Image (cartoon, rainbow over all chains, first blue to last red; front, side, top):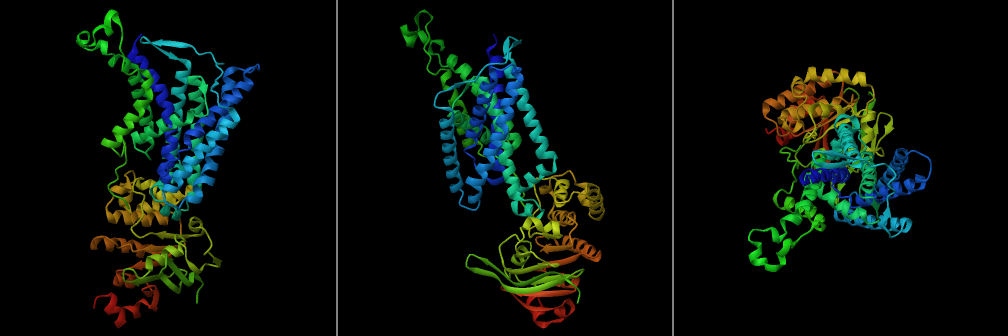
Length: 328
Length: 237
């Protein structure tokens, strides 16, 4: 088995989920410079709603693909509704408040959503019913599953769709115009409240699909899953340059790759018994082909945040961060 | 007297506790070109922003037969009121063509929008050459042309122009004013705010002089150009 190729496939899969979630952060940030910390929870609720629908329908005679699709289609409007309500209740009243205020309500909303999910779905991890056949294909010595293919394709499709919407449609151009100058956008007849609400709703809709993909991939859903996933996607958005759509896509995929490759190789790389001359200073602990691994793949989560720190230190504006020389 | 297209009554603008506009009244009739001149900080820009409902203000604003001092700012372009803001306010990261399309954002008559775009490109050929270029890369004069072209894309009845000469080289100022003159000649009602009083008064039929938040003189442009106080204060004579 080819480990490198395998980790790249795994990285692309999680990376494309991160990218889709990161789009939700970056769109909102681009328009109102707010980090919607509750976005990870919206993604979690998307996974939970889909879980409920899929479990309820799993015993019926409906075709499995249809059941999963029903789960996704139920999760999208629920998450969109939550995204809209978040903006309406928690952020809009604070539009002109100091920037720290909406940041705090964002964290508050995140906690509230987590506990609502705790009340509804309980504290135990929920096993996502694996109802779809998940065939495995062999490419170049690595395995890629049907679910992985579906996740990567669907993510690319959503990223392409969003890009088309934001760069080619009239409302999309209005979103970018509002992001740049909300006052002048108003002079054009653009209702800023509507644009801002739209960014929340679109981001939440994408997040819902991401949540279902994530749950299906790991086979599990839990009321706290939005926290780490959200933080990683946020890191991805910062990595690519927050506020920048292509940046979020590149950042997400890059983060997934780094994470997969990192956790795939860190065990080998930190196995002191494989280091040159190990026998002399490790002595008996490496006898008979024994291993002495300092960091295992359970350090997976470290890589995302390590990258976030490195980016913030060396390139605070992100990889594709906007540098506009002239601002009107 | 013709019907006033826009009329302000006792317009007041406050920033915190500071009064920038202290209860001024004025009117612009349909088809007229009127200028508002005055020194830096006299309250001219605040007056225009108040008319376009970009900032909160007290007093009455009548537009045609309607009172618009309670209308949200983004609804005004639908009624035909366009403001070319101070400092141009172009969307620097959008292309020239996208900027122009935003000027027609509120319109749904796709075919007529295309016709208007062609007209703008004929009038301002530089914009056509640079249609696909990001607007932030244009020169200051080109950006001002874009800002005016973008406002015209909304088919306004009333054009509020805030300091179109600001920060431009003299040659460019002339070109911009030529465009403004052409637009006015086609029957557009224009309210022009300018620090360059001489240039403005030569173009307008009437003028108001603003001093620290109040209108101190209101007269025909010819009389203002001849007025000794105006000449001393604003024409550098």
